[in-house]
Image 1 (cartoon, rainbow, N blue to C red):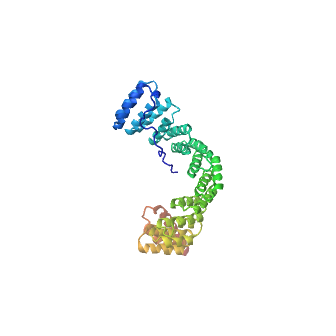
Image 2 (cartoon, rainbow, N blue to C red):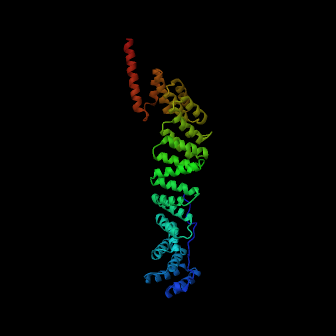
Image 3 (cartoon, rainbow, N blue to C red):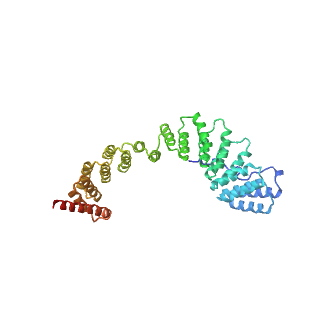
Length: 386
């Protein structure tokens, strides 16, 4: 699932401002004043070095110092150290929402998603008023960090607090529940929102995934059929549905689904897949007709001949193989032509065609067996004639 990009939020108090004199020690006030001058001159690295030295000399530095240090590091392109500065500052000032939020955002930007989520969730609790979007972003970060149980916990809290939650929030919550293995809760949530919005295709798609997780393939396919009537499916989605039908041993449904996927001009390779499904359903004639329409190639011709041979329509298969051989010497076509002659008890033709490919590696072992039988038959006929 595509996750919305979190840092639509801005870093809070990125650079130093001038707080009330009573809030700062003299040393902090002087350090921040000098740092701000360096920042105004875009000398971010020098500002960061100076602020870091001040922090190192203090048992506990003021929150504004940590904010300015993180901001200077961030501006100098050092997002990792900036995140560490915000996090250390928050550890000293656990009620400071700006340090907490900045730690979350910079950790997210450095792809430390699970740690970012922890800070974003805490920042949400510190907000007044609280913004639901921030809690969603915390859940999203947990999801990207593959902490699915935490993502589900946070996102369920988000949904419970909203009368009409955003559909993206609902979908991500269900995905988190499914990935966390909490199928019962996921099902309850899916059905709840399906009852409210039965025309929402994404809920049907999530229901299909839930059924698939439980090994209920028929129910999964049924949910996908509804989903794909509510929205236009991609070729890939239809191919996956066809695979689901094939797994259920429903080749006609699989063939029909692939026909939807490939349209009126499937091309030879895709036509072969559809024809194979028709043949698996015992629809040899339909398979041959489909190949005639959409796959005029040697490979398709071979497949058509094989389908007819397997359906014991030997005369029709022989014609196909002879047509192929008239255009090109295809050893496999000749081998099957020999088998057609064999099945029709045309022993001379069978021997003739087998001998033509007897020396070829792919058929050598098989052909020796057939030729031995033909030799025995010929010997038996001679003995009977004496």
